Length: 187
Ligand SMILES: [Cu+2]
Image (tube, rainbow, N blue to C red; front, top):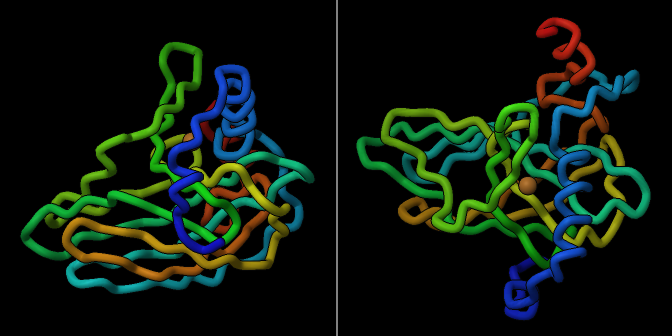
């Protein structure tokens, strides 16, 4: 399935299912300090749509049977009008959401952004592990490092943009380095 299905949009996980998904999601897109010994050089790729430049959409390799996968990229708005990412989809899952993750005290909280993500005129928004991200669930197959999958971003003004997500290492940050390095330098 490559597009958001009505059924997928309408199906709300039960509370326990939701808790499970959130826990797994924290693993998938959180600041997991897993060393990634296999991440090689990152080959950047990008897309243009109207005033928007979309840089290097990527995702993380997942463990077997992982229920969710994340999606990350940079979105630069070179125009003079704000735009908004309103919907996302990918061929690996019937459902795509736009999420925000942030620390509240010692707790990592993740929430869906029901109104989407504003890309202000002249600004660049980074979707990255531990912050804004896309979440695809349920995940229909395991993601392996080095492969890619197709997706679509829908913006209020720039419209639909077909992209390809490159799958990087399980602890990748999108720049060829792993989280382990980050936690080493920030603690
Ligand atoms: Cu999420």
